[in-house]
Image (tube, rainbow, N blue to C red; front, side, top):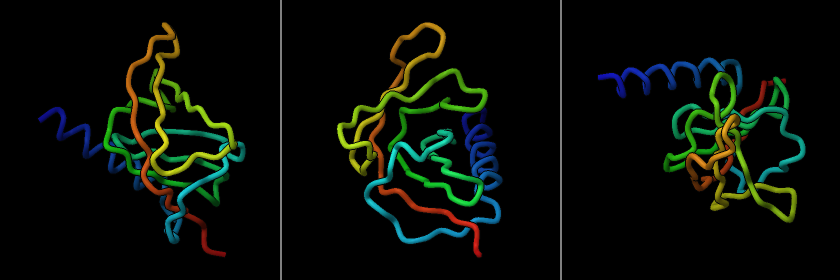
Length: 115
């Protein structure tokens, strides 16, 4: 019941984070350098470029507790400055520096504020 409750809370928080934004067609890659914030909502990762633009990627899980009050930070390795579907991210505990998990990105769905 606790896992179910947490999943419900994460979905509610995700809906709040995307409130007022409309989903567009998925893209395979996004520029890592434009991102201001990264936060996980269970297996869903949200990259915030601005209040008007966020990218959402579904993973198979393993990259929980990133951003916000979470104690994990994202570590990605890219030579192009882009994150792409299929790329693997690792999570590291902010305090200890130990690896805590990893996940693979799905396509990135842009959520934008209608003009």
